[in-house]
Length: 258
Image 1 (cartoon, rainbow, N blue to C red):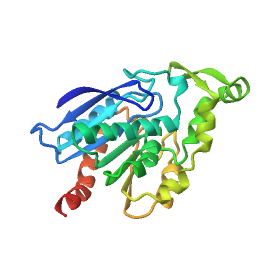
Image 2: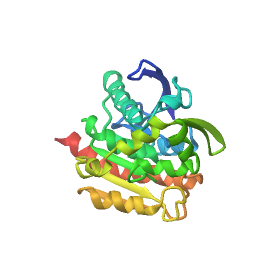
Image 3: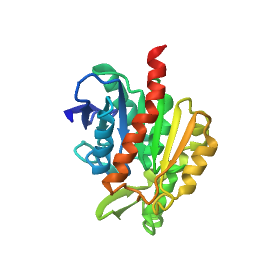
Image 4: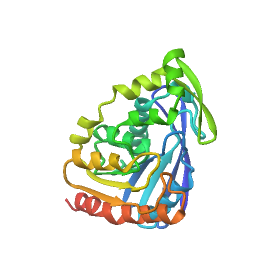
């Protein structure tokens, strides 16, 4: 898999680290933009497997670290869901200026909610794919457990998430509560593909059902039997990547032929 390490500047002037994966013939049929999960990074193995599957089908994929995460600049404590959406829009603008505008938006977990929210602001996008996404970004507050009450009372708290500590501020919770996803999903103009595992212990399958019910056609749902939330088994992430490639080309080829 050929790739380039890139940097682009977010809305507040900080450098965000990105990677652009290319198909072997270096002649992409389309470009995709990938949003990683909450507190994750662009370098998670699941994202790498999905990107490899897509490049194998001629689709270039740009993945990047949200502000304050991975190799990107910034303080995570000062970010929120809305700033993630802004980062996605800025990433799409960077792709448009230097390569090609993204036709495909992919998001994992909270990143899935973020691409749903960002889609209206990325006019080049034709298809949106969510993987284990919450129907409402406020679902993330459940992962904070008892720390949520501390944050609301004191204004901030240090929270242990998947073995790492992060400072979460009250502005993060306030931002989650301010987002209206129902209208966003209802007004989505792109084709939608939803992946979710029935036994997802982090974001329940009912979230996929809600997104599917609200969204207009064209929309599709694929159940990830026995997969976990983070797609830790390489077979699951490779399966997701191959299905995305097959599904999305219908919409990319349709647009190209007009």
